[in-house]
Image (cartoon, rainbow, N blue to C red; front, side):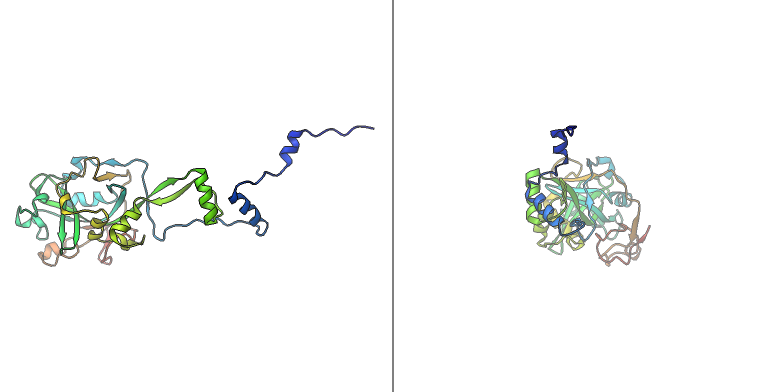
Length: 284
């Protein structure tokens, strides 16, 4: 009588089902008995946001020292950064010398002096005694031109959790998807606190006063070089905007007709992060 071959311990171990140890895995194992397939749950924002590029570089001074009408569309898609807040520029307006809607139309005053500085500096003014409006000074020193930042969108980033923290988070949230990364929004809480609004909808940043408030600006930021590292910066994310909308500027009824009707307002197409009125914007 032949003795049956002995099975190795290694084969026995491989045939055994893996032991479930973590709270999340235990729960998933129990739920698997009651359903044939586990559905992945992933929470996404209602509105599309922008992911932080792997590398953002400061724009050099010469980038800004061109005609405001040329600089305006080039600023679309660029990033504004102050402390932990990063915003993507989605809408702008150009203001040129000899423009009856430009603050420099009356010459140099204590209020408008920053707009006559060299391109690449900030010009922040108070509108209606309420709103801080951020402008990027354009062209050469003494010209008196700028680009108003009308709207922005918050920028997404990556937040990596340690294994222990992430497992605990999944356990308490009772999620069924396991991953070592999740999406977050750079400085969203800071933006919401400064704006006094707990929302991630375009209402948060669709207006120049809202952008200034989200960045925590005051008129003291005028003359600040936006090409210098630290504090308030304009950065390039490496991607050019392909589809652009154009239209007349907003709220300049006091200007001459040719300037009121000039198509010097620019916005990124296919984004909800732009201000009203939207029906005056047309494809370039």
